[in-house]
Length: 247
Image 1 (tube, one colour):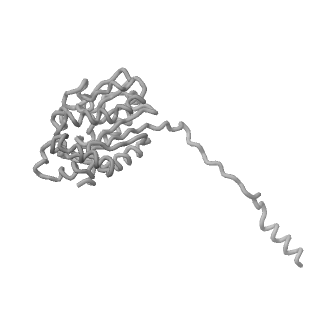
Image 2 (image 1 turned 120 degrees about the horizontal axis):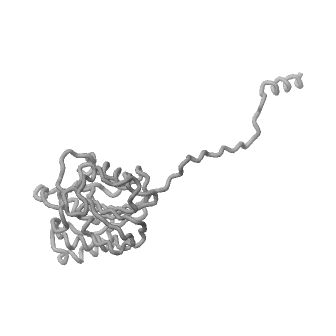
Image 3 (image 1 turned 90 degrees about the horizontal axis):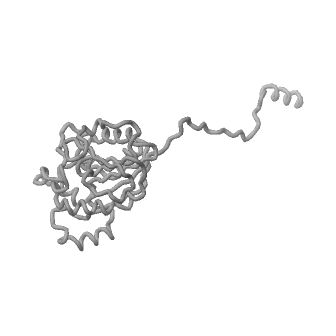
């Protein structure tokens, strides 16, 4: 289930707000706390929030003044198809994708668009669902197949990082969070979450990734070949001279 092709003809309607998700307000607070330290290190002129969930995140810690959101079904500043962003190439300094890949039928194309509009040296923050977690296991339950966030498409952190590497992004930081399936109220699982986060940190139900777009040189640098010994210019003549000396 977790390694199906990224593209799908079956489109799942993305949630219009955090309240659509199980324990949505609590989950939103956890995401905001997780990315707040990263936002303070991002600079530039334009911050793009992709999707309604990203648009609703509190990003006051970010020093970028112009912040706006794009979503396909409303709930943001601009209504547009995420597969064809109405933005100029290399015009965005940073982007936030909160579960945007999990509720898009073509995450490859979405990331290509983000790469197109991101300036060299710009950043991208991705929040995704970890399939190798209690929430990932619960998503296998048919009774939850119509509920958020269990009906999203799950991609492992390693897989998303591979996609970013192909596009020329370098992973700057990553972390796991929310050690819960979201089926129970947070205060019921408080001690279990604390235990898992300290002893099995890799099974957090959500992951956060911050990546930076690398600046590539305009002209390729050719390797320098070193000659360790002088070349033999006329090996045949040298062999004939040696044969005459032997006679």
